[in-house]
Image 1: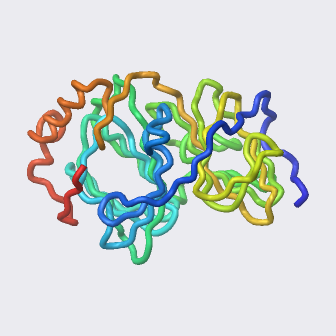
Image 2 (image 1 turned 45 degrees about the vertical axis):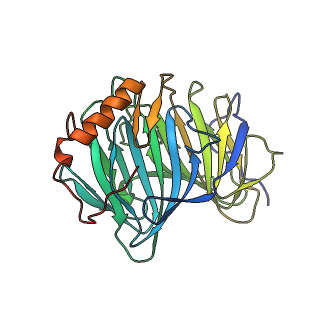
Image 3 (image 1 turned 60 degrees about the vertical axis):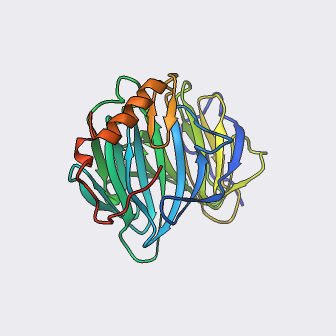
Length: 302
């Protein structure tokens, strides 16, 4: 396949792949299947990222009532739809290509359940919040697929979930500075995408087969997570005859102590103990959980 002219600005020090993981299917929620690449035993965290799941769920399976505190969840639908409902009365459905950026802050109890026939597929990323932001009020940023910034150049298409690429910028506000780019490369396309040098960054391959970091590297196919080393950006090639689709995600490390207990992520064990106490006693942000149940009527143990 002839190589196209490189897109984007040149890089002084392209990031190389330093670790590679295949995300294998596992059970999560109630009957749902996820491929977890960050948040598993080999890679507990990748500052500021806590979890990356590629999920697949078919009714009546789903993610019924469960709490969060201390971080953000980013849900990006690839196929089908999920209905989200929380204890504060916020309810909505996100479909193919839609984004929900939820800041749990001091506390949310919510459910995420299938809203369409067949299998619903998507990605969910957990992003840690700094100590100064862990107890802020919850909030949502929701963008429908048609409103996500897109750009196309030299056989490359990008959907800008967060950050900026190919001259297009996302309206999403990231408390923990983050970029989240969904790239599709046509056969022969060559990408050079800047990433701030101080940030951690990774690639997750969704479809096809690509070469990352170094032209002579072995191609990588779907469901693989690639941790990128130091440098000023990502270089990627599609040397195959089919489309290549992957996400490039980067974030500024918080470099803070981290203690996690399931859906609660704080800085100290004392804060985790307090969070459990708050949740069990419906206080300090969890008051509305006392009498609330989602329409699913189910509760997720953790």
